[in-house]
Length: 321
Image (cartoon, rainbow, N blue to C red; front, side, top):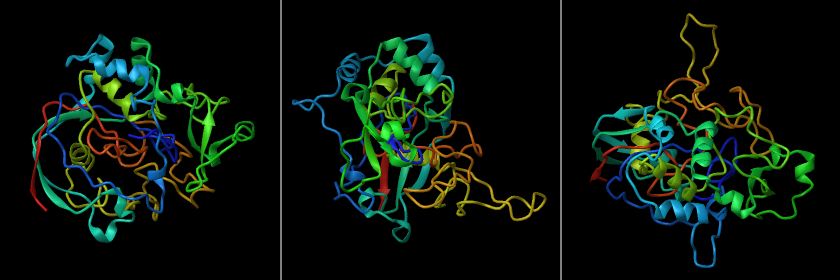
């Protein structure tokens, strides 16, 4: 998972790194071929480590400290909120006619067989990540780097005045000094009122360290998608094909249901926040079972494109393509 910055709540980062956890290693996952950065230019938002390519000191220490069991009572308590996902077959991927950015590797559609596993019901909140940081004295990579990326729309004038460079391909994602999960939009912001929101500005290495603390690992992309689909195969969304389904007839006529937190308006200059949230949303907000859909960008154990939840005993096998 690259270091994220804040989209409408993106994640690894675009500011946003939504994180969930999975327990025990899964079978190796088929890797998507590396693709050239596309129109969204997300592929240009990488982050370099040290000269030897190593992770941050905290992340490296966590990786070297093995162990399959949750390390503390607090870590074990986090695992109590996981949900069991029964095994089965499902069609993974997005049909070609619905793929906007082929370089994201969301196709082709293929059938995959899954065994049962357990995964977090919600993305990891700031409150949960704070417990991990305190218990392990952990320092995230954004904190070590000294900056992270945020959408220009959400920066104050004071923070904007400190910006001295940008990524040409994505000029709306700006490198903000002293920006991290503790200060999501820079030095004049905090998470005091967002403890139930998903933690963001978390790198793939940070996420791995958190999951290891819980005795687990990140889910594979197949596990994440299988769980996120909510049992509805070949639907555009976990609840069906309509992004905003209409309420039942007994409800106010014409009123639409917002089931996920995404950008509304003109990207990247105007977010009308019709769903009630201008940036991230509480992990358990909106309709049940759908917050994994779009609250933040996430990372998985295989592709590094999403971060999903903690899983127990899982395996997968490709059936057909």
